[in-house]
Amino acid sequence: MPTDPFTGLVPRKMTASELARAIRLDIQAELDATNLYQAHIDATDDERAKAILAHIRDEEKEHAAEFVELLKLLDPDQATYLDEAPGDVAQIIREARGAAAGQGTGGPEGRLTVGSLLGRPQGEMEEGYA
Image 1 (cartoon, rainbow, N blue to C red):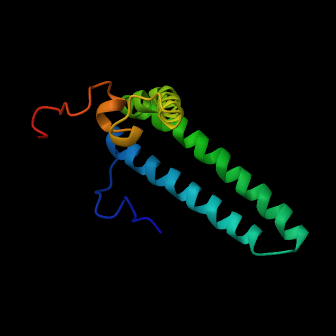
Image 2 (image 1 turned 60 degrees about the vertical axis):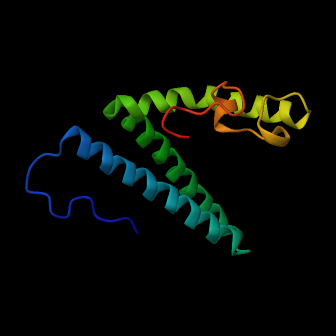
């Protein structure tokens, strides 16, 4: 189980940063519960139990999604990453498909590298990372 984020806090309202951290732990807890309930579903043949567990699992997925939306409101930097992620993932997939077809801009043997994902020629390193 995750560590209690309230241990050691003085009796006061949380800052926005502390609340965002607590919401991240809430997201983790929802995902842990989702995985636990799915494991129970996979481990039984009792259709009644499977139906109830699947219903509860799906509610946990909804809670996780709602917490993510709350986190976006509380942490604008996190919101930026979450909003950019679909485009980043689509680009990575396009480049991976291109590399697999022999037409990618990946590194050695067509593999994707940090540089290829950033659009840098092979061998060009960020200053300070040589």
